[in-house]
Image (cartoon, rainbow, N blue to C red):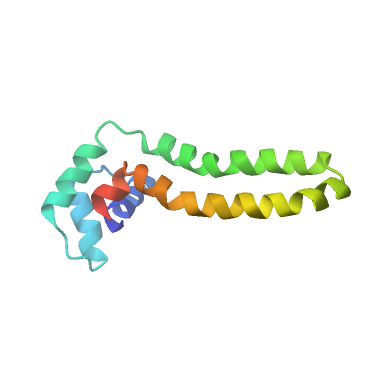
Length: 114
């Protein structure tokens, strides 16, 4: 993960994301740098707009929260009490499925570097 963080630091500071700069950031942080991982990261980020990717990642969790807040305002207390038992059963089922979703999503830089 520290490899991705190094790229984010370089992006935020306006520096070019290249092998030399990433290696410098990692070495300054005391990380034992693997050249192959640095090369793979630079290649993976070659055509990526990091600003756009960060904005999309930041916006993704906010969308479901906004929808849930809107739905909560419309419900009444009696409806909430009746649905509490159903919700706890649904949550238990969702928790069991989370592991499968994480394994199935095995795409992205996290799997490559951390």
